[in-house]
Length: 145
Image (cartoon, rainbow, N blue to C red; front, side, top):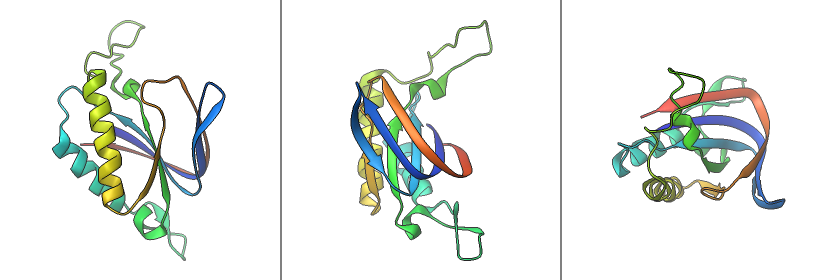
């Protein structure tokens, strides 16, 4: 399981010109599910995301978590995080999870993050999404479990 966590002032997702989800300050999470991922990895990653200290405290130090700042989360599935570009010029996605499995684990991630007290909005699984964000920092963290 791979994720890119981007600290944002705001983020949104549009599908076919329609606004689907929008958040204020918090995290835009691009989530990739691999072929060998399972609900246990989802739980571990959700806990790590909720506790990761990547938000600034009153002294400007990265010392607070998204939970402590009451930040929002925009969770967007992105199978392209499993691109293998070692051979040729066309990415190979064979290690990305199949769509049914990936959707189930993405839904599980949303539920686990919400169970940890976070406000979570999502994109539309499998849709051609337009993701907009106003980065904060910028701070982008790659997380793999």
